[in-house]
Amino acid sequence: MTAMAARKQTMEGGDPGADIVGDSPASVIPGMVDGGVAAWQEDGATDGKTQFGPGEYDAAMAAQITLFEEVVHGWDLAAATGQTLDVSSEVGDAVLEIAQMLCNDEQRGEGKPFRTEVSVADSASSLDKALGLTGRDPNWSA
Image (cartoon, rainbow, N blue to C red):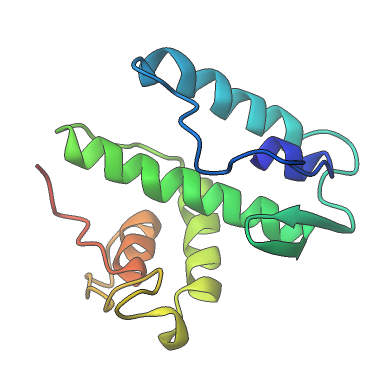
């Protein structure tokens, strides 16, 4: 869906809740991620407006949300499976900047995207600070 948003395409009649990975997510997800990354790198991908999730967004914001979602949920998956997610300092800094925009008090609580902020050390990495803003404990592991 994020690749479609990058290309200013809409999902006509599709089921956004459909199972698109089947019984072998590991064989499907890398190609989906690569396809989404490639789509956002195309000329004009971040220009104008696009259909993204439940509504229309500024395309540049949709790209930022995509990066945020990929990294934060990538961390979720890594932590839940006893692995680590290593990102460059540039990616960590970008995700922190996006988290500072998205993770506000209006978006925290029951039925909302983010939980109560988790305090992290001032010396923590940008990624750990972003995770804390989402309500995740960056020291958590399965």
